[in-house]
Length: 229
Length: 229
DNA sequence: GCAGCCGATATTGTAGACAATCATGTTGAT
DNA sequence: ATCAACATGATTGTCTACAATATCGGCTGC
Image (cartoon, rainbow over all chains, first blue to last red; front, top):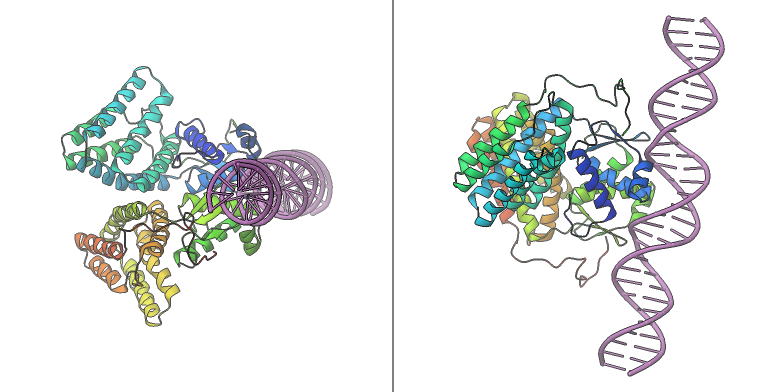
């Protein structure tokens, strides 16, 4: 969460791990050894521990005393709860954006949409994931609530973990069409329409998940093909 | 945030610091030296650093590289933002509680109200503050959203910091009467009434603050009567 | 064949010493 | 009197060595 302009080493570690998780390069259950991270980021273990402590608060990492850290493995209940929180927060953020929309805001949203389309056209998975979350973060920024934007950023990365856990088929994340629908409603100044479009969009993502069958956690049951973080 | 049943030393440090901040025993700008905290909690500095990293994510503490930690000093803009977030989240939590209310839930709310009244009668400031926040946390728990409850817990302690910064006169926090009004609406199954009562309650707290004059931060301008944390 | 115990391994947790960084105070030159 | 340079103090950041803890696998006894 780049909330400070000057990025400390801990900020950098958190951001890069956040991004790796959001892009699903680090999957739920992956081990995060202090010594490994210390070597990768060229910092002391004390720094790494601080970064991991932060990520634990954000729910992205689970720390086990004397055992080490793993990327979090959200349960089905947690998954449902996260979507409930997203509906709550994004409903209010999108309402605020629509109510106070400016030409500049619309331009930025349109520009972002073009970037998403371009990423889809070139089938750039990493960019698609990043821009998908980026759209919601842009909404948060335009809504002018630093706090809820920070919470949303956390929710987006947790959503990515959930998708990594429970998406049974390789379905695309949120396609740009649904983002465009939201932008269209904002442009029309239709507050209720904007809220409905966002709610539908989030429901679409949630319904693409298999939230009926609990997945065995990697930390509970060893994978058949054991893989390391 | 006691989210785990077994409390680690880091959990304990965070909880006690959280409580000291919520009860306004630790005031905005107070210094938090690693060595001091290490001695107080009988743990290594590494532990203290992890705890401070967590509290930084929660917005309760500000870490300055090579300078140390201080209790956060929220700005007016942050204060407004926090109340915006509270309205957003508590609106939804209280809606859910009212919609799915059970006799047991009502009993717990009533019992809590009695505790608040008793604390007011014996003029127990520490208990008043704790129970005041506890009422909102109970709403979060009864709403069944672990995530938003955690966020709310963070918002409550940040609210306490804001009150410490911007409450010009020694006004009581939320009096039990407004809590009773909310409970009454829940009991009646009046969803809209419950939301209005909560919104009014939060507005009451916000309006008791002086959010027009920015306070000089302790870390920016030395107090005339210097005091240490 | 199974349960319990023990040793090994992996990784975190701690402590102490010292380096690094930043702010403040002092001193000397103008 | 003012300013710049330097010294000092306060506190965090790093490193290293080793302690502590949890897990796992092998061996033994029943």
